Image 1 (cartoon, one colour):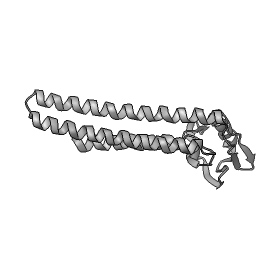
Image 2: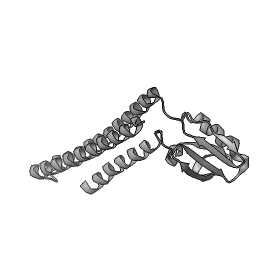
Image 3: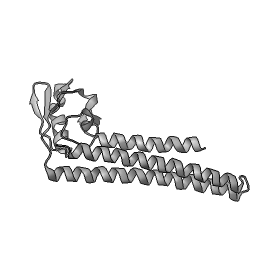
Image 4: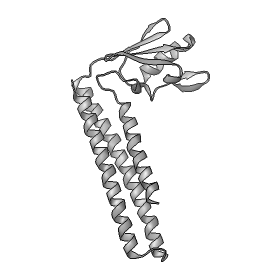
Length: 181
């Protein structure tokens, strides 16, 4: 049972890490495009399924589009994404110059990172609460002793503290990354 809880908490931390990768910093990173979907073949499709995404240098991303009829849709999806990037079309290659972040934008992004972090902490705490409730039900139904319950509660609290600590570490690293000029 505790192993399942631990796995869920680990997944919550991994999910936060993925969310952080979608937050823009001053360096080009292909994962910045992970949450962008373009209209293609009648459905919303992730950009990485419409072309090769690469980072030729720290200040730009390129997308080698496989189907040139989708270039306009991809361009519009990038413009609508809120990343603040203006795509440049060059044949079937889309260049995305990554502009330096303004101080104001950096502050907005650190707040967004903090919000993602707080949401992950809430997920971890909810996992803890649900697990503890299930264990207390077992105790109430006389399927577990008081000592066993206390031991499990201590283990669960350690897991929770560990996960919260990892979330805080990820947030600290991401904030430093965003604020780095």
